[in-house]
Structure formats: C-alpha cells, structure tokens
Length: 310
Length: 237
Image (cartoon, rainbow over all chains, first blue to last red; front, side, top):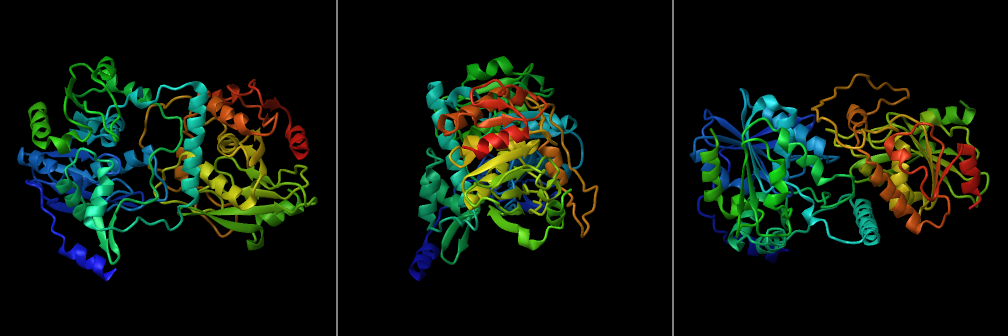
C-alpha cells in the first residue's frame, strides 16, 4: 500500500482552465441530515439556486458556477444527501431530496430567485418550483426533462422478465449493503471508473473531479458518494407524471437538451417536450453535445442563461 | 389480547431477532412458537404506524412459528433520520426477514398488505402465499402523484419506556402518499404468478377496495376469502 500512496502523492492533476472551488461552504440541517452548501460569487449579489444531477456533487460545477457568478450572481448549490460532503442518509427518496432542497432555499432570505438544475437536479428544481412557487422567478432545466424514450421497445413477456431481473438485482444489492465501502484506487483509476458514466468528458476533467469529489484514505482515493446508492431499483414512477406538471409552471422557463445520446442521458427529444411547454417557454436542443451540457459547453450554457434571466 | 400476545407486547429481548437492512436494525419478533416443526413460518406485516408486538398473532391458526416484522421507523426498529420512505424500501425490510427465515407465508395488514404483494412479486420462490388484510395504510396515496406538498413533520407524541413505540412521523406522512397505480399492482401480480408454484398465491380478505387492490381481485391466482380460509389453504400447500 505504501507504494500505492507514493504514486498518488506524486500524481500531478491539472486544474482545468477557469475551474474554481466554491468561495464559501456551510452546513444546512435538513431534519437531521447535514447538507453541505457550496457558494460562488459575491455574498451580496442576487442569489441563484443550482441543483446538480444524480451521482454528481456541487463541485462538478467548479467551471460552470464561476461563470454565472462572474455574470453577477451569488450561485448557491448543495451536495444532495449521500453525495459529496453531505451526510449519508438512512433513506433516499424524491420527497426527501425536495425537502433538502427546500431547507437550503430557506436559508436564502428574500423573494423569488432563479432555479437552475441539471438532469435529476432539473427535475428537482421543477418540484421545488411547485412546492414553493413564491420563491422561484425563473426556471432553467439542463437536460433534465424526462420522456419514455429510454424505455426499450420489447414485448410484455420480455418486460416482465426485465422487471423481475431489476427487482431481484435491487434486492440482492440491498442484502449486501451493511458496511459497504467504495473500492479505493489511484486518481487515474477513479477517473476511469467515472468515465464510464461521463463518456464524453476528457481525462483531465475526470482526474480533477477525483481531487474535489473523492477523499484520500490511507489505502487510496474513494468517491465520497454513498456506496449504498444505486441506479435503478423498482417502483411505479412514470416520466409523464413530471411532464404533466410542466405546462402549469408560472414563471419563465428555459429548457436545454443535449441531443447526443449517452449512458446517463434520458433520450428526450425536442418533439417530446414541446407539447408540454408552459406559455412563453424556450427550448433549445444542442446537436453534438451530450447529457452534461453545462460541463461540455460551460461558456455557451452560462451565456444562454445570463441572457435568458430577466 | 391473549396471554401470548401480552408477553410479546412487553417486547422481551428473547422474542426479538435483530436483522440488518443497510443502516437500519429491524426487529423480528417471534410471536408464537411452532406446534408443528415441519410447517413453514407465518410472517405478519403490520399496517402503517403499527408495530408487531401490538398486533400480536391476530389469533390466527397456524401450526408453524409466527413472526412479526417491525418495518423501518416502526416499533422497535431504527427510526431513520430525515425521512425518505418508499414502500419499495420496505420490501428490502421483508427481504432481510426472508434471508433469515427462508420460505414463509405472509399475512399483511394495510400498508403491510401492499408490501406483501410486492414481496411475493420480488421473491416468489420464498413467499409461499400472501393474505392481504385490512389495516392502516391500505389505501396509499392514490393512482398518481397528487399536488406535491412540503411537509416537515415534528414529533407529536413522545416515546416512553413502555410500548407502544411511537412511529416515525416521516413514515406516517410519506407512506400515506405512496402512489400505487392499478397496472403496477397487476404487473407485480404477474411477476409473482409467473414463478410461484402455487395456483392461488394471493388471498384478499380485505373489505376495502383501493384502486390497486381492485385491479387484482379478479386476476388469475387471486382468491377472495377470510384469513382463516387463506391460512387453511396455504397450510396445506
């Protein structure tokens, strides 16, 4: 293990151009769960709330958030429960994530402010807009509009088999959770692992993410993400449930879709979203850009948002 | 209550086996010993806000041992911090009991009836028959999400040294809003009946007919009947 350590200590990670760690961090208590909040920009600037996607963390915004901050905003983000520096929770659910988001929002005094969210974070700020309409001034959804497109086109019998496989895989995962730990590794090893979820990200960025999203234990680096969280599972959720809420949104909305398909993406096409758009909403589909629109094209997306916000 | 129920009510440590489900310690109560060593256990699942020691054995006839599982946030099981309940995660609770007990027949009340349906879908080889009975939380939160609300429930009742144990207020709120579409319930039944060795795998003794339950009552593999009918049938297969 000593050799392992030496290799890691010597490993040089390049800080991507424009990347800046949060200017401030603080803890918000959400019914006993400690939520770690990250902020960029002048403390007295107008606030903007930004939610990261599933299996990401606030510091994946280290290039994007400073651009919004330079545009005149106090950008407030947070590590969702089980992610980044926030507590690993007993339980995870959509309602719990919305409550945590509201707990963060409640620490920002004042009136309505813009909400921005990527992927799961996009859906999360949509829910937050519904439960706290008095606090939202505009909504920006970055590739977080669900559709049924990623459901495979299979027969009923095949669907039942897949459902059984998913359900039993989920239960087998639950049976093995006690004291589960992430595998330790070197910075390049963790970057390669994350590269499987972030297929379009350059190695330089992934290795940088290790240094801000993993912790350095004596036996190697480990992602801070709660090892008990897992994709999939089972439940009755349907994408149309979220989409049916969209037309009722009462504030200006900007939706961005990354048109390049990738593993973490939702496969949503512009035509899926258009019938549900609220009045006056703007939808932009970006060819040649994947799911992580704000990480692949931070300048483009930041400018789009800054121009969109009143 | 019977004397045996009263003994269980006091929650003596001898009657409880502790099972681990992720970060939750679950209390599995042995409510009554077997009179027939060859009969599989009957697992009782309580309703929303209830606990195994309080519902006792329900005075049912069963020659195998009778166990009751306290769900997460209920009875003597761990109260999680900060909520986040789904009925799916309670299936993980049941699965921890199945890993310990092996094949069982399940009798579920209310919320426990819905979880029992999910459990037989997920583990049709280990759940040899379920009885769905009336009880708190049988309705769930309807067939699609309602208007979302932000609820930060505060404890209203204080826990004392005596049972009953106060359930987690987050459990009461979140598991009462649990969405249960009828076709989801039907797909759960299909998952179970595809694999289950039983011709009748679900007995409905409940009088209540929330949409999820109404959707399965006339399906193949489902039988209407009393708890006694159901357990009589499952005891013989």
